[in-house]
Image (cartoon, one colour):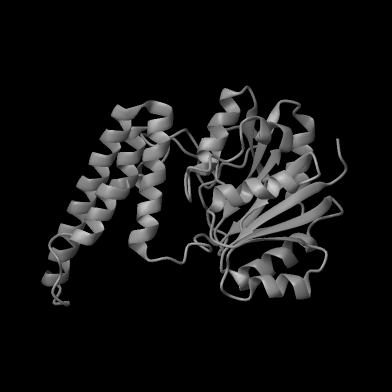
Length: 304
């Protein structure tokens, strides 16, 4: 095993988060890190200048445009020299001992292809870190907002007290993942057809299908702010989210499942728009729309 691990961080216009992330991981690296690679996706803030000036030991890769989260990570892993690579979001900060817990678990499992961490919100409260592979029933619960109320019953996931010990998971959230480089490359890395969202679950599924195991390490505590790299308008974010979900279902469950999900997305979008408009009118707010704008609906129909 090549000594140390490589850290790959993808950045897009999150200069302050990136600086905090780099300072944090360097402070808790515990001598385990061999190299740092930052892949910048065409940022228009001063992210690149900040890295050059304040972190000269970081290898900086500059993309001319925003190539997406999946492609940028793949580029970083291609450059990595260590056997294990930590894929870290700019809004994720490891607690002391977290990295060592992930590395020790990985080293003890010859068939491990990926190790995920125990995510927490900034206030220390629970944040979902792993769950079962998506099904249409789960997607319906998410779209209708019922998923949180039904955790563990009809929506398989883990709760805030799920810290008994490491275990094999279907998939882990992508904010902080330690991947075996040979396994990652064997399955083609992140599917670059995903611009943003769902690439983590797709990777975990690809690893499992190839015979590798995916592990969840509750001892590796990571504070995840959430949404740090998503600064676009809400309709655009939703478009990418829904497009990725549909792509996942088409890839792993077939065209019929993908079409069903598209209908579910459209139906819940319309219903939410109607409810929102009625509530705004009833509470004396500005005149609400009884349906989402045709522009928003067109995005869902055309892009998803």
